[in-house]
Length: 303
Image (cartoon, rainbow, N blue to C red; front, side, top):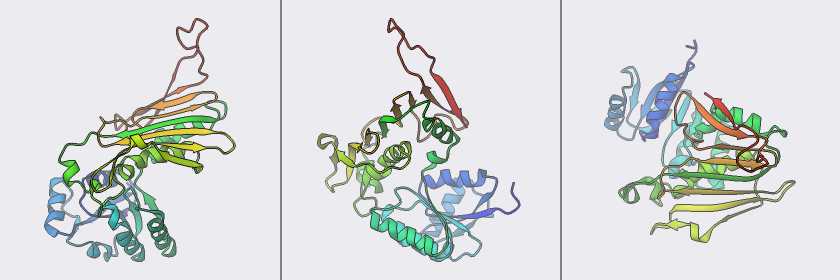
């Protein structure tokens, strides 16, 4: 345990906050210092139901937590429509910010958030956990080794989850005034992020949704989407992504290059907390009689 712990505060009692509260307290250099809700009773219930220590501070408003000088970092699992308001205020209060994805509804809102953090000298990080997993670090080493995968030609990524009927009536992710990006912001965020990661954050030349692959609700919120991202720079790459609230759970990522390929089916959340694997095939050619591969698939692990 580090001598100087970083004090975290959480604004909001969303379900994802349970996972972050646990992670904060498991880290050797941080501690969950306070939580806040718009209702003091809701914040108290959140603390009790999730076994948080009695020493934790509980606030009945977001402003009270941000005014606490002992809090150094705030995590915001709020609806996307509230991100600009509360992130800017947190930055003005000199709090570092961990913001749940999607971070903003559009580029203009993101610019306001980043400007507030930069001008107030605080750090900003979005809540895409998989990018910081040891497995991802190892995959990046292999992916950018030109002798293993080579130039990336094709990327395929899915993030899907079959939601119950009540989800489509009540969840904030299908509400225009709360999370207007729908499945694109919730699950598509991972797919697009995986493509950008695999291309070392090059921006594609053309992005197009397949007309037959887009489903919206009556409010115009996207519930399912298949799209293509095309790169025509030094080396042509095609990426296909699919995100949906209608399909069974999937978190697939496949990257194919000129010399090898990398595959995994749990890239967002590993099947097991303590270990995570991926398949790397390099070189990837058939045996002469085409009854198998001429090289064993290597199993990579990070954890």
